[in-house]
Amino acid sequence: MQDLSIEATLVPGTRGVFDVHADSVLVYSKHQTGVFPEGPEVISQLRTLA
Image (cartoon, rainbow, N blue to C red):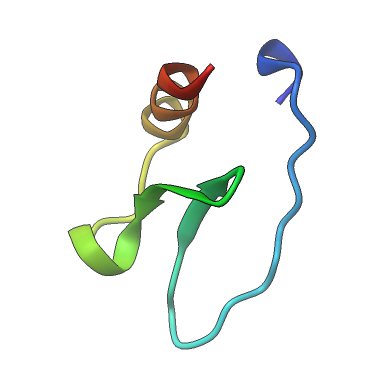
């Protein structure tokens, strides 16, 4: 995530859960949407927090 100047860490989940958190804020949840996000979708959400 160099273009956002952040360090990303992958934390393995369980049972197909894929959530993206930034500074303890839920940015995207596959569990809530039922859809795995595309990269640009997550990047866009992260930019709104910056």
